[in-house]
Amino acid sequence: MIRKLLQSLQRIETMYDLKSITEEQYAMMELMNDRLAHCIPKEKCRDYVTEAIACGQEAFEQYKDADIMAILVNSGVAILQDEREFSHHGQNYEVWAQITCGGKEKKIELFMPDLRRKQQILKENGVETGEQWLIKLHLAHEFYHFLEFTTLGKVGMRLDPVQKKTIFGTVQRPLTTVSEIAAHSFAGRYMKSEILPQMTDYMVMLSEGILPEETLRERMQEAEERLRKNEGGKQNVSMG
Image (cartoon, rainbow, N blue to C red):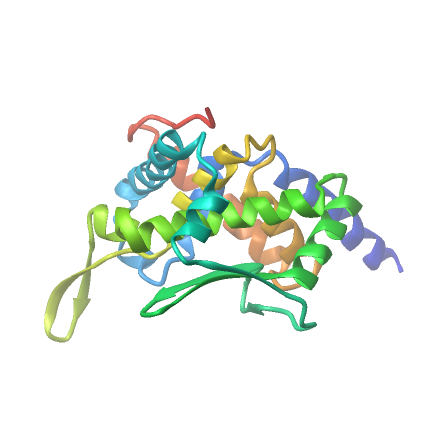
């Protein structure tokens, strides 16, 4: 009984801490989850974070007054609301929307039951968001990926590749999570959001047990430490 109470109090504290994390910290947590994270020199971590956030900010400056829904529709992208009841998640991650933009098929799928569940979990933890707001937030996120497919190119290809050692020698590989960092950066700014998009994701994953609390705490601490060690890197980017 006491153990469960302590666990409940710890979770409440973690939820509270998620509300105070900076954009850079969330971005660093994302970067640390990259499959090539072990190849990133620690002194360059902050630079990757700053540059990826800046990519999203640059796109926002270009499209801040644009009707992104109209752009998507006029470009032949179908916006689909999937009402099927199954959860889209894997180990330590969850998906609420996704874009397909290869070949002849162009679509953005919004997983509505998951989005409604997200809205409810956020409300239970003191974060009020409407369903339409969440839909627009995720559309903005996928719109950035649409730009990557069509005009901008993948963020990982625009930033310096990392050096990966293989049995055949050292090869250069692009990071993938920097695309997510940039998309979050764009979406939060486009929506003029007072809350960081990543916060909404982590709250849900913690609440549903997709991301264990101990793992989340470790990520939060490591992200803070890496940012502190790299304070001499490039300047922070504000939410604008």
